[in-house]
Amino acid sequence: MDDRQIQIIMDSLLPLLKAGVSFTIPLTLISFALGLVLALITALARLSKWRILKLIFGFYVWVIRGTPLLVQLYIIFYGLPSVGITLDPFIASVIGFTLSVGAYSSEIMRAAIISIQEGQWEAGYSLGMTRWQVLRRIVLPQASRVSVPPLANSFISLVKDTSLAATITYVEMFRTANQIVATTYEPLLVYTEAGVIYLIFSTILTVLQNYLEKRLSRFSVR
Image (tube, rainbow, N blue to C red; front, side, top):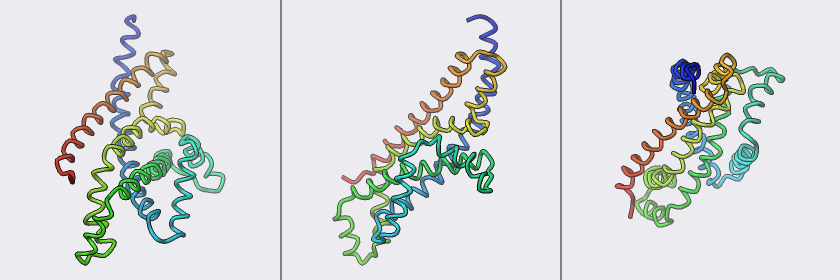
C-alpha cells in the first residue's frame, strides 16, 4: 500500500463514518421500530379468529417474503411515480424496509406467541381475564423474551441491508462509498473500508444483543 492509498483511507474515513451515523443508523432505527409495530399487528391478525384478517395479512407476508427487497424498493421509488406517487428517497427507503421487517418479524412473533403453553392462557382465563388481557399481561411479555434473539439478528441484518437504499439515491454509507470511488478510482480500497465499518457496527450490535439476552435470561420462566 502506497502513500496515496493510505491518504485515501484517511480522507474517506470521516465521510463514511458520518454517513453511517447520520443516515444509515437513523434509517435502520426508524425502519425497525415501525417494522416491529407492523410485525406485531400482523402476527396478532394472523392468530385472530377473523378469516379476512388472516387472508389480508397472510397475503402481505407472502408477497414481501417471496420477492427481493431490491425489487420492492425499486417499485416504491421508481414505479410509484408512474401512478402519480413520488416519494423522497428516505421515505421510500423507510417504507420498503418497514414492510420487509414487518413481514419477517411477524413470523418470529407469531411463532413466539404460539410457543407459550396453553396453560398460561387457561390460568389467565381462570382469573377472569379476557383474551386481550391474557395476551397483554401474560403471553406477550413471555413471547417477547423468546423473540429477542431472532429479532436482534433481524436488526443486525437490517443495518447491512440499508446499503440497498443507495440504489434509490439515498445517500447512506454505501452510496457515499460509491461517490468516493468515482473520484479516487480505488474501488477495492474504499469498498473494503466501508465493509470494515459495517462489520464494526454489526459487532457492536452483536455484543449488545448478547448482553440483552443475558439480562433477559434472568427473568425467564422455568
